[in-house]
Structure formats: C-alpha cells, structure tokens
Image (tube, rainbow, N blue to C red; front, side):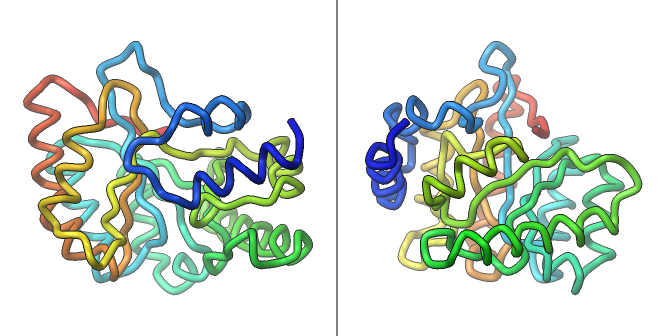
Amino acid sequence: MTESVLFLCNVLDALLFTKTPSLLTAVYPECLWKGNTKAKAIYLTFDDGPIPEITPFVLDELKKWNAKATFFCIGKNVEANPEIFQRIINEGHSIGNHTYDHLNGWNVSDKKYFENIEKCESVLNSKLETQNLKLFRPPYGKLKPSQYSILKSQYKLIMWDVLSFDFDLKMEAEKVLKNVLDNAEAGSIVVMHDSLKAKPKVEFALPKLLEFFIDKGFKFEKL
C-alpha cells in the first residue's frame, strides 16, 4: 500500500461519513471495520471516557438491556476516574486504548504519538487483572501511514462502520438516533462517545436505539 493511497484514505476519513465508504475499508485491510456479519449482533463502542458526567449513565443503560460494549478510553480519564473504569471491567465490557490525552496522529511526530499510546497502555494495564486485548482506535480516526504501519503489528486497530455524530454540537439528538437506526446492521461497529460534548445526544439516543434493535432480535456484543 503506497503512502499516497493511505493519505487519500485519511483525507476521505476526515470527511466523516455516517456510513463508512467501502474504499476506506478496502485499503486499510489490517483495521477492523465490522464485526461478525453472520450473527445478528451490533458492536457499540464509546470513545473518550470514562468521566462521571456520562459514563455511569451509559453503563446503567447497557446493564438494563443486558448489552455489552467496547470503551476506547483516554488514559488521563482512567487515572482521574479509576472507579468508573473498574465498573466497566466488572460489568463485562471490553476496553481499548485511545491515547493518553486524545492526540491527533496527523499533528504530532510519530515518536510523541507512540509514547502517548504507550503511556495510555501502561495506565490501562495497571488497572487490569487479566491480559489486555490490545485494541486501539486512533482519535478522529487519523493515522499517518508511518503510524499505521507500526501500530497494525502491535494492536488490533478498530475503526467503524457507523458514525453516530453524537459529538457534533450542531446535530440534533433526533438525527444522531436516526444515523444509527438507518445505518446499523448485523456486524456494524457503531461509534458513540461518553464525553461531555456528546452527553445530551447519548442520553436521548442510547436508550432508544438499544430498545429498537433488541426488539428486532439483535444483541449488543463487545469486541
């Protein structure tokens, strides 16, 4: 894969489609864009937590519906909120590395980026009693080709099939819900956020989308 192709794909990724274009999935073969498409399962993921303002709400809703999810955690938030992080683990969800302080890989040197990821990994491992699954999602989905070539051998790189846009301050909560309801299908990896910016959208959309898909016979599984 050439650097120019990867750069083009990063540019496309930066446009932020609700439904990920097939071009991106084809040229990032080491990334996971969808889960098991043969099972009637959806893979909810939450980025940027844990924080007390929204993560406990997310966990309460997941527990209510017997749903599992994957949380891509920021290292400094884990350090600040160890009890919430422990609850994520105790309630059977998966966790992943989302850098120590939400670095954009395009804007920093590889050395700084890798050090930031390793710092987050150290924080996660210090809180875990079992082997870390070594899942990584780059903040904003942005990786330089040089970063991608290294990380794909160290982590399972998790991207997404459906982007809810719950982080977009201009988007109404009803539209966030519609983004997921209209686009998620068997095997979909759906991105949401347990962040302050996303809080009102998540509080509106999460209970409704859980009920909608579970009523249709779907399960929510962790990666």
